[in-house]
Image 1: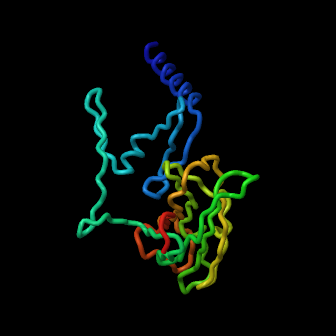
Image 2: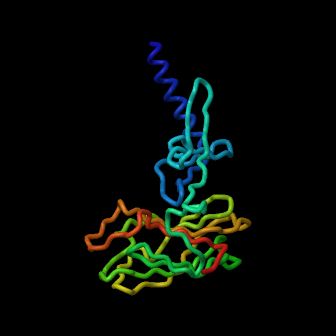
Image 3: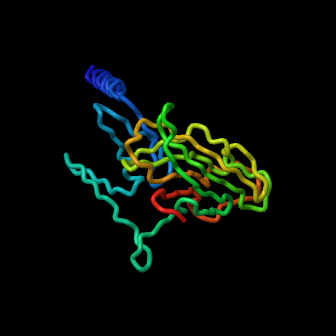
Length: 220
């Protein structure tokens, strides 16, 4: 009977927690999509320990004490901060072995309609192969990062499913809807996962992390 009450009690706690969750967020860690979600309970946002570990935070539990150790910034030779992924500024071309990408501008949406921002981006097939498409080369999303750390994903990206011949591409205006218009966009991310390559074309990324991170506080 005691075991039955324990099972019932655990189930009721899980049900109460699920009902208390007010909102969930998709997790992006160091520009990469992570498993699990962040949840909002009682107006506060919570992230799982597994997600913190994936972000490089050291986690140890001793008795009733949970200790967290924040990672220091990685250092390259000469002491400069090392950037593992492709990162650049506005109007600067970035290349990952398949795609050439740049952000031309990011501006607020016109007044009178839905709030948010619009970003003008340009993508080109940088290979000598015809028919490459983002959807088949590890596409994960196009996101705008705000100065408070929140991210906004563009709901419709036309260039995602469009196949491009070698050397060709397109300019697209991506829209990011948000009511946080008092914040400032700091980065635009085009997330790509090389482990999710679906194309049969003979193309491969030439960098370990092919995602693009474009800083909006500088211009190339």
